[in-house]
Image 1 (cartoon, rainbow, N blue to C red):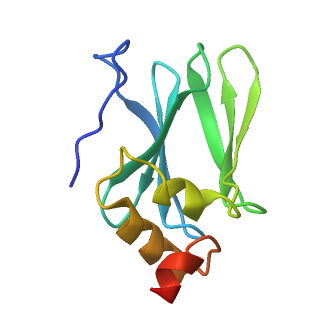
Image 2 (image 1 turned 90 degrees about the vertical axis):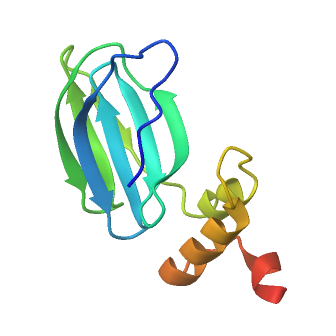
Length: 123
């Protein structure tokens, strides 16, 4: 269990949409304030946070082709959220904000067959 670390400019924000990805072991969260959070599922480690819209996201579906998500906000904009699997593990390995990031990256790479953790596998 982990607490969502809301953005400093949105302390009263709250989750509106939550979706798990089977292909990458990640959890996507979109908040009322328009922030997108990506967590590694086994440790609930925050991997990525970005404001993706200023409008409320009103609906979302899984993109079955990419295991990402497609969303529509109140203004009618269509937002596609996808993971670049060629860069995910190396991003996590170098992310200083993730506690024990090399172990998290190694587990993701080994569990989901992702590239990018070659140096850890060799060690």
